[in-house]
Length: 411
Image (tube, rainbow, N blue to C red; front, side, top):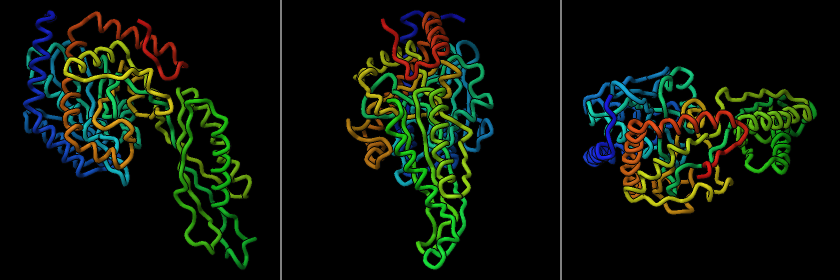
């Protein structure tokens, strides 16, 4: 295939940007529609349908219920050349709705994909556009990856709303566990000695985990809730349930921390004579291995349309989060940049962030994010040297698995 020169590349980018501008009313309307109807992991029926309906209205034929997940979807554009995966998320959180702004992520992926598709025969590569459910809980991307969603692609990209523009974000490995303690019910006043208190077991485990928190390395996190503590205060609880999550900079460190937390959970049962049913999630989220050559190209493109970036090195590790995009980054070169749409200090997973996710600033971020992703895909498709550097960085990250949250290489 013919590779465009600098003038040709810029022309492709200009055309993609004009396509995003022409789609802006549709993208904004769709984002606000998804925001107004928040749906939880694996239940994003209306959001998934709305995204697929939009594709079909514009003449494309997405595969619904793709890769074995009812709310996943996939579609492809282009016939030859480098293969780029673009991703949309669209699930929300319990009680606080789109307090992570996935309604923005939904339309940035859609807008970028449609902009690239609009290039028709001039598209210098191929695009696999994926709707990826259950990022907040369930690891949809990992489940899709196990079924081949990222097979054959050369890189994967998405953009996430935030309080600043930054080329990458520290994302930790995470897994969660549900524990159920089975005891014996009894009258709490007349014969408590007959009972085995499942709530006491859970409280003992919770306190042991709280003590453990003081003695884990920086960058590791443990947090949890008591989801069932009994039904009546005058009945010794025969069942208690808790839900905990553990995070660490690498999957290796995560496995070590899981073992320590597991011991705390077992100790609760041992101390009370109850039985512990400990169920770790089959899907662990991996740490994010940002592909820095690709991330820097995204930053250059976003700055070209007026975005101002913070330095990744200035993001404190204390603000680290987790995403199943990390799992993708262990399979193919990937980026997960952040785009500003809320004032600094606005906390993710808070109602205030949900409010900002429907703001004019958020809609501008969606349009800018779609443009920056489309331009970055064009650069990747047309620049063989960039593809080589991306590949070398990916192999280097794989070889340096214990390094944790990867920093950009020195210039």
